[in-house]
Each structure stands twice: as structure tokens, then as C-alpha cells.
Amino acid sequence: MKAATIEKLTAVYAWTCGILLVGIVGGILGYLFYRGWPGMNLSLIFGDTSPVAAILLRQPVFNGLFPAIFGTLVLVLLSVSIAVPLGIAAGIYLAEYAGQKARHIFGMIFDILAGIPSIVIGLFGFSVAVFLHHHFSDRIQPCLLISALSLAFLVLPYLIRTTQVAIEDIPRHTRITGTALGASPLQNIIHVLIPHSLGGILSGVVLAVGRCAEDTAVIMLTGVVASAGVPRSLMGGYEALPFYIYYISAQYTNEAELTSGFSACIILILLCASLFGMAFWIRRRISARLLYRH
Amino acid sequence: MERTIERLLFFAAITSAGLTLLIFIFMVILGLPLIGEGRFFSLLTTPWSPSHDLFGIYPMIIGTLSIAFLAMRFSVPLSMGCSVLVTLYADSTLSRFLSGLIRLMTGIPTVIYGFTGIFLIVPFIRQIFQNGSGMCILSASLLLAVLIAPTMILFFTDSFNRVPAAYTLAVDALGGTRAQKLFYVILPHSIRGILSGMVLALGRAMGDTLIALMIAGNAVAVPTSVLDSARTLTAHIALVIAADFDSIEFRTLFACGIVLYGFTTLLILIIRGLSTEKEEVP
Image (tube, one colour):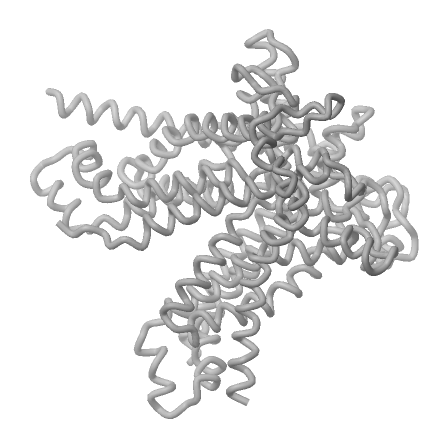
């Protein structure tokens, strides 16, 4: 009974791998929560400052995670607002206007951009900052703006791809009905294509937010610092959650700091997981709902 | 109006494409003094020892390759097993749970893998092998294997599911077992998808900075065993970064950048080659 033996072995192997994977992820998450949960409280985030005063930026927070969380939020908001208009516009161009050949060449270039390691993009951002510092103004140095621009490059190819795919996935008869009835290409884009692909486009945006929030390699070369307080200007340093985790892993001096590192991990993981969950929810819900409303 | 918008959209596409090339051009220009002095290629084969005026990145290239390929050796069998479980052996509830878990894994930041690795894997490896600090190629590639597994599983299951149902149903109708369906129908049909997933995962493994930086120990010697500490190209860039624009140390970072850019571009071209060729229809 050779076939039966192979069948049994394959099944055992597949189940072993599955259990191993669940075990690894469960182990990592469980360990993080076991070590970090005791430190999860308001003073972890706000230190000795009152939460209301901190959120309104009336008082600085010295020994809490608030500046790092706030820095990450500002950074993500900045880079996404740079990348989203550019990425969606390029995606629409590729899906609707570009010819066969242009689409092929652009597609290849954006695939390459998507594959560039984030540290190389960070190195690029850093060198641009140093270059500008030497040749234009002494005031320019690695800072919040440079980080945001570099992160925008990092997520640009994802936005372009998801937009292009979302539009191209619209059934062909829907895509061409508008123009067949006399709508201009632009009217077709605004009234038909964007509403029908909104779910896909938005989930691309949410994934881009997630990538910006988690990335450490780009920001550690382009301006993040260990303690800067809440970011005051685009040209200054700032703190960020992932960098705080990296910094603590190398520089912690006592058990309390280590626990705050684990707690920061939990906050970051909850942030990223909820963003990714949102992306999948949006993809399923919004597209379906818009379809029925029309 | 129509024309203006079209031009604007074209402008967005060309700007984004221009940026990609600009990154490469910037690397080459800043690394140019090295190429001009004829030192670029010797950099790729010599060791790193600033005190002896040696700034080669050979150890980092070896570090990157050995960590990435060792991670692949752990991760490919694991991902393959999980994909088989999801598509063939699990019932729909378990299958949905596993797919959700795998998507969750793609959302876990690498810095978190690095952070947990320091306190879970490193002491474990140190105790088992009683060798050094535990910060070594083996520890880093074990964690990298977990990092790249979801990429591969998503690609594998996707290409398994694209095998036409007529073929898989035919196996069932003939009384074949699930293993026979896997080995004789599904695997031969999804070989391109499997290869694409592996190449993409290799690219992720080479491009990752934080795990190697936090776990591999960052020694600049050429590693000779998996228990040796090693430094990857990515970690090297993160460690040597300095504001002194004219120093040779800083210039060599662009050599690292060019090598990484070259590696990943090559991998992307392979993937595109795999996916554009027409699937053979028997």
C-alpha cells in the first residue's frame, strides 16, 4: 500500500508544518503580551504628565511613549499625504491612458522600486539631505520632512499597483459602457471607475499607512532620534515607535525600560494589525456597498 | 480640461518612475569616486578593516547571502507544508483561521521579530550550542524564515488554487488520494507560482535590515560557520552611516547600496520573466 503510506506521510508533514507555524506565531505574540502587558497603563504613555495636557500639547511628556506615538502618527500622515495623490494618479494613468508598451515599461520600473530594500531608500534620503546641506543651506539635515519623503517613495509602488489592479479588475463591460454612451475618459474615471474601484484603492492606502508605521530602516537613517519630544517643525528631529523599540533593545538599562519596550511592541503590533484588518474589511465591504448603491 | 488632467496623470507616472532611476543614479554618482579609482570591483572581494585602510564589503556580501539562503532552507519546507495543509487537508474553518493568521503575520513589523528574537531565540541558541553570545547567522535566519514565510505561503496557496478545478476533480473521480493529487497534478501545474514566491521571499530576506542588525551580531569577519556572527549589507549601511560625506567608509555604503539594488532588480526581473511567459496548456 505505497500510495496510502505517501498519503499518510504527506498529511503528517502538512499538519506538522501548520502546528509549527501556529506555535511560532502564538509563541512570539504570547511572549510579547506576557512580558509587556504588566506595563500597559496610562503612565507608560504619558509619564507623569496629565493625559489631557499632553494630547493638547500643553505640557511636554518626558518619560512616556507619547512623543514616539505622536511622532509616528505625524510621520505616517505626512508621508501618506505625499504618496497617495501621486500614487493614485500614476495608477489611474497606467490603467486607463498608457499604451501596451508604456504599461510594460512603467510596470517593470515600479516592480523594481517595490523591490528596493528600505535601507537603500533610507540611504538615498540621507544622502539627499547631506547633499542639500553642503550645497544649499546649513539648516537642512536629516529631519521629519526628509523621512516623510523617503517613506513616501517606499510606499509609492504599492499605491500605484493597487490602484492599477483595482481599476483593471472592474468588469470590462462596466469599464467601457460610460465611454460608449459618450462620456469623456475623465468623466468615465470620475463617475464610473473610481467609485467602482474605491474599495481596492482604499485598502491600498491603508496598507501603505501600515508600511509607513512599521518601517524602521528608512527612518533610522533619515532623522529619527531617541529623544526629541513632540515634533515641533518639519526640519527637526522626531521620535517614532518602531525606532523606540530598536533603541530600547540595545540601550535598556533596567527592567522597567525593558518592560516599556515590550509594551511599545504591543502597541505597535495592535496598530499594524488593526490597519491590516481594516484594509481587508474595506476591500470586502466598500466595493460591495458602492456596487449596490448604483 | 481633459488634456490637462491626462498630462497631470502622465506627469505623476513619469515622476514616480523617475524617482526609481534617480535613486540608482544618486548611488552611482556618490559611489563614482570609487569606480573612477578602479576600486569598486576590488571592494567586492576584499575584507573590511578600516585600521588597515581596507574598506572591502566582501564579508557583508557573504553575510547577506548566507543568512538569506539559510532562511530560505528553513522557510521553504515550512511554507510548502502550510500551503498544502491550507489547500488540501484543512477543513474550511481551519483553512480560514490559517489564512487569517498568515495575513496577520504579514502585518507584524520586522523590528518586533528582532526584539522578541533577542530575548527568545538568542538565549536559546546560546544554551544549546554553548558557543559565543548566540548572536549568529543561525539565530538571524531562523527569525528571517518566520518573516518571509507568509510571503511564500500566500504565493503558493494562490497558485495551488489556480489549478483548474477540472483537473483536481478528475483526480478525485479516479479515486486518487490527496497526496497523489498534490504530486501529480497541483505541484507540476503551479511550479511557476512556487518559483515566483520563492524569489520574492529571497528578495525580502536580502532586503531586511532590522533582524540581521539586531540578531546576527554584526561582526565584520567573513563567517565560516552558521554559529559565527555576521554582518549583512543592509546592517552595514545602518551601522556605518555618518555625516562625513567625503570619508571612504561613507563612500563604500554606496557600493553596498548598488549591490543591493542590483540583487533585488535581478530577482524582480526573474519574477517578471516567470509570470509573463504563457502558461503551457497541455
